[in-house]
Structure formats: C-alpha cells, structure tokens
Length: 477
Image 1 (spheres, helix red, strand yellow):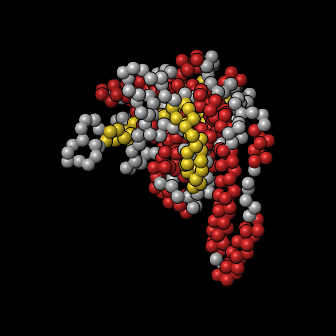
Image 2 (image 1 turned 60 degrees about the horizontal axis):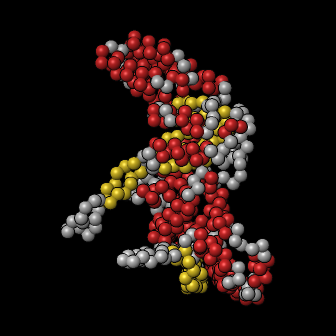
Image 3 (image 1 turned 120 degrees about the horizontal axis):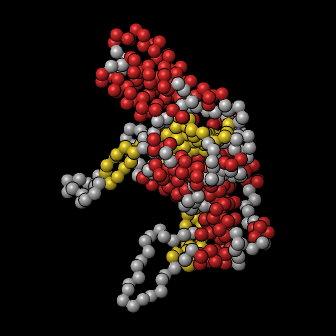
C-alpha cells in the first residue's frame, strides 16, 4: 500500500521554515525539501513496484509465456537492486529468467552459461534499463553525451544527489544505444511527416575520431597491459532537413541527424533506413548536398532506385566549390598577382553562372607549363565532373539549397565537441552508440527515441497481458 506521509512531509516543511528564518539559507531549504521529497518517493514506489512483481496470477504467467518465446525459463525470485529517478537504490525481489538448457546428449558436457546472461523480464516490461528506471537512465545518458567526459558527468550527477560510477554510466549508454539501434531510423519517428509542398534536404559529410583497437599477440612481460592502437577513422554524418516552398527551414519539424563509423556502403544503408520512413514520393523536391567526394555521388542513383524515386536534385556545396576554385587561383603566376583579385572575382562569377567552358578557356590563357597542367587537372577532376551539380544561379532561381552548412554544423556539435578530442579513444561499439545518442539529442528527437525504446518491450508482451491489467494495478495501489 502507498505510505500516507502527508503529515510527516508537513512537519518536515515546518522544520525547514524555522531553520530558514534563523539562518536565511535558501539553498539549504531547497536541498532539504529535495531530500525529503526523494525519501518519500522511495518509500512509496517500493511497495508499488514489489506488489506488481509479486503477482503470480497474470504478471508472472505472462512473463513465463514471453520467456518461452525467448528460449528462457523461470528461475525463481531473486533479490536485486534497482535505481529510480531520485538516484537512490531500492532492494526488491524480482522474477529471474535464464536461458533454457538444451536436451542432454551422450558424451557431451553441457556448457555453463556466462555470468550476466539471465534477465529480469519483469523489470524490462516496466521500462527499466539495466535495472535503472528509464527517467534516471535518460538523465544519466544525457549528462554523459553532453559533458566533455564521463568523469565530468559523474560530478554533475553527484551534485544532483545521483551517485553512479563511470562504468555504470558507460554501460547505460551502450545498452540504451544498442537497443535503440536495433530499429535505427524508425525509432526516431513518432508519427509520419507530411511532406506535401516541402523540400527534403539531405546533406552528407565526414568527421574524425580516434578508434581504440587492442594490440594483437601476447602481452610483453615488461608491461602491465596489452596496449592498444589509436588510429584515426572517419565517421560519416547525415542530416535531413525540411524546407518550405520558399526554401526556408520548417521550424515545427525537427531535423534528423545520425552518424556511423561504418564504411561508405554501411553509411548509405543507414541513410536508406531513414529515408524509407519518409514518404518521399509526396515531397515537392528532394535535394542532396555534399562536397565533391565521388563515393557519395555515384551511390545516390542506386539509393533512390531502392526507394523508387525517379526525380531528385544534386547540388555540390557552394563553399567547397569556391575553396577548390581558390586552389587554382593560388597558382596564378607572380607577374599577374596584381590582377589576382579581379581574376578571382571573374572566375567566381563564371562559377556562379555555370559557364565552365569559359572558365577552362581562361585557365588555358593565363597558365603555362607545369602550372597549366596542374590547374587543368584540378579543373577537370573537380569542376568538370561535377558541373551539373554546380548550376548555382539556376538552383537559386528555383529556390533550391546550395549549401551544406547544416551538416558542417552537425559535425562540429555531434563529433568535434565531445567525441573528437585530445586523449579521447573509443572502442568501435561505444563510438557507434555515442554517435547515435548525441545525434538524436542534438536534433531534438530524444524524447521520441526514449518513448519508443521503453514501449518496444511492452509491446512484445501486449498479447499476453490480460484486459484486466490496468484495473488490477489500480486496486493494488
């Protein structure tokens, strides 16, 4: 039963008031009220949680039916600790399930399952993640992905009265991230997005982080640890934004961010998972914007073919185009340096208007010898191959975006400010989870992801739970 502590709480408030008027310490009264409230929450939640877990009529029966589908069996009630949103630990008895033993065969000794393979299915049904309530897990993970390190996040949580070690925080991030990435793409959507009269802008770019790989072979006798390599890898990041008919950002529809350290084919598979959740056929325009990396552009037709889309636009980022143009202007001979500003301005105008034949002819006139060969190689390999993606004046006239500033900003916010840094090395699995978690939070879809992950396990049991469940819970509490 729920503890009736209204009078006790009133007495606590009265005592805090007296102390406040005597020492005028408002911070102390705030902290006292918080601690008193947390204590009352703990005492009320414990009997509610234990009552549900103890029910053997419908709750345990439903769990056993689910366990049978998972190849598991009931192994009795076990004492375990759970953490709730106050940061405190409650000790409860929870139904515990382990992997069902295979049938015995002659001459074969059954293998013992490793520690930690059992599951508290009842707690998972109630929304616990690693025996931590979803509200507390969300708070902890947000701190872990936003603070510059897990250690700093631990200190901030400590100030809130939540005491967790770094390994527990890392385990929560990995567990939550892995669960969410089982339905990557779909988990970021709460309801279908109406794309009528909207432009879908898809931007792609890459960042950098250092991956931690354990060294092979035996550990040297002179060292205490095996050691590891810290090679740089390039995570690839996508952004999907929604623009109105005038090319302005729709602020009422959050964008989509995600990143992966998979290779380019794995990245496009991730992009496909997101785009298939959108009804692209109803969109007014679909625009891809990226730099000049050929590996991106040559895979877009296959991607759109899988999505059964026949019309889209490709725009090479205007800033990247100008940067590559400036690499050619840097080759201008010394005797023409006094005219460099005028030449650069003229070439920028030709680039904007899409007059690439005139631009190439101008390069032929100005350069000689090795400089000419180097300039033409740059022009042919970059501008010549992408001229259809550089019709900027035409794009602008049709209200098409010509810049990938969104993905450049996302690279800085998602990767550079937390995952890339001096002395920060990530295992592959942890890096993938952190990229996903930071992407979902920074694009404004954290609450949607959390809601979908918690409801996923509940939906798995929905066919077993009887109709009278809600009525029983109301009676129990």
